[in-house]
Amino acid sequence: MRYIFIVQGEGRGHLTQAMTLEGLLRERGHEVVKILVGKSPSRKLPAFFLQGVKADVLQFESMNFMPSADNRKPNMVSTVLFNSFNMHKYYPSMQMIRDEIRSSGADVVVNFYELLAGMTYFFYEMDTPMVSIGHQYLFLHRDFGLPRHKYPGSMALDFFSKLTSVGSVKHLALSFREMPPDYEHNIIVVPPLLRREVLELAPSEGDYIHGYMLNSGFSKDVREWHSMHPQVPLRFFWDNWEAGKIHKVDDTLSFYLIDDKEFLHQMAGCRAYASTAGFESVCEAMYLGKPILMVPSHIEQEINAFDAVRSGAGVSCDRFDLSRLLDFAETFKADDSFRSWAASASDVIVRELENVI
Image (cartoon, rainbow, N blue to C red; front, side):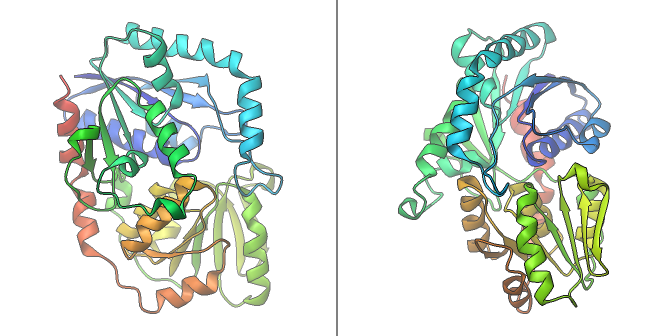
C-alpha cells in the first residue's frame, strides 16, 4: 500500500512518530510516497528528521503557538491574533495539501495531528481515506477518566483535536497502557511509536539529571536550582540555536542544542529525567526505566502529566524543582509491562493501517 503523511512540525514528538512509522511501513513492504510538514516560522525542522526519513519532505505554512514573553508557555491571545492575521497564508497550504494527496496516488493519508489536514478534508471533497494518529485522541476516549473540573482548558483541547481529524475514518490513540477500543468515537488505542534506536538502547544509571525543554525560557528554573545544588550534574537539551551546540555554564551544568542521537544517549545513562511533559520523551524515559519530573507548559502537557503520574512514571510540578525528582527517584520502580506494550507497536499500528481499505 501507498501512504502519504501530514505532520504537525511543532516540537519533536510528531516528527519522531512519523519517522518511526515510515520505517515500520517500509519493513512490511509498504511505501510512504511523501511527507508534508506544517512549517512554523519560529521552528526549524531538526536534522534528525530530515536525515532519518526516506520519503521526500515538503513544508507548508501552518498555524503555530506563539510563546509568552518569558518563552515558557504558549500565549493564547498572541496565538489567536497571529494566526487570525495570517489566515490568508493557510488557504494556499490547504490547496497544496489537497493537490499533493490527489496527485500522490496514495491509498491512505496518515495525519499526525496537523490541523490543516482536518481543515482540508472539511473544505474539499477528498476521496483518499485519512487516519489520524496522536496521543491527544486518547483524551476523547470514553474511559480515559480525566477529572475535567481540574482541567478547564480540556474542552478547548478536545475541540481542537476533533478539528484536526475531520473526515478521518479512524483515530489511533497512542497510550501509556492498553485500553479497549471506543467504537462510539472511532478510537483504537495503540502503543506509543518508539524508534528502534530507543528499543535497542541498554540503559544504565549515571549520576546526572537529563532534561529537555522546548521553550528555552525554562532555563531560569534550572539555573536557580543549580545555584543551590551545584554538586548535582545537570545536562539539559533545548532549542536555543543562538547558544551554540553546547553551552557550558560550569563543570556541572550544560545546555545542549537538541540533537536526537546525543539526546537518547544521554537519556539512557542518566539518573533521572526532567521534561515539559511531551508525550514522546516521557514514553522514551518510561521505556528506559527512568523516573520523570514533568513540568507542563500547556493544557495538553498537563493531561499528559496527569496520565503519566497515575501510571507511576513520575511526578508533576509547575517548575523545574529537581529536588522533587530526586526524592521520587529514591523509591521509583520501573514498569516492565510498559516495555512489552511499547514493543508491540509495530504489529498493532501497521495492522490497523493495513485494514483501512
